[in-house]
Image (cartoon, rainbow over all chains, first blue to last red; front, side, top):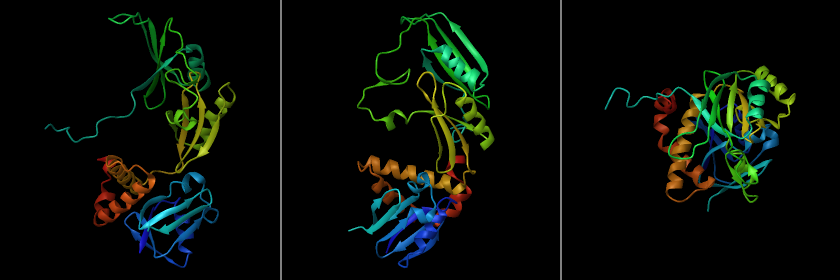
Length: 82
Length: 214
């Protein structure tokens, strides 16, 4: 299982909520971080989060077992690190 | 070892100093447009082993008793160069983001205060060039008469303890990846995830005593 971490601040919560809609992810709390775990790739659509760009491009706190396959103004895609 | 050896003792900015070739514009910008009081000045004849020009060192209050200061050297011509500010000149191949990275940001308490400074700037020849909501602050920007970038900013919300913890974790990860010659955001985020896992048993302690305030 790979994980992505987001700091629990008000600006990041909509990002985590949108990610949680993906069937394949599991969200837990690890201290001040949300830990999103999955065994397969997933994507977050910025437009669904309402995050402004400064928030969007700084929302990821850590990645373990994933790699960021794409991060543009509307899409953030995580793939399993090979 | 003395009683102060582990204390965080500094209390903010006494003054940040910059050279100017345009004292008239500088006074108009800081005193007359922004309304920052002149609080100190030194008028000095050049002296010493170097051929030091005569100069004026003058200060404006930027709040909290902190000050921004300028040196004006009589008879000194602006340094040759194309882009940049009164202190630093750069060639055309230096990217704009790098030129914009060095700046002074002053804080205000409210949106009304930020709006007021935007109004003062927009009524002057140094109009607000940009207004941006960043992650947790909102800022306005302009260049002063010397080419220095001045930002005025307000917090959109207070900084939380978990952000201080996260900042310290980020910096630990940055030092680790750059020290081992692996400087990339991917390496940094991987290292941060390792540190998050390593510190998972210590969150209560870390959040109760953020390193930034020790």
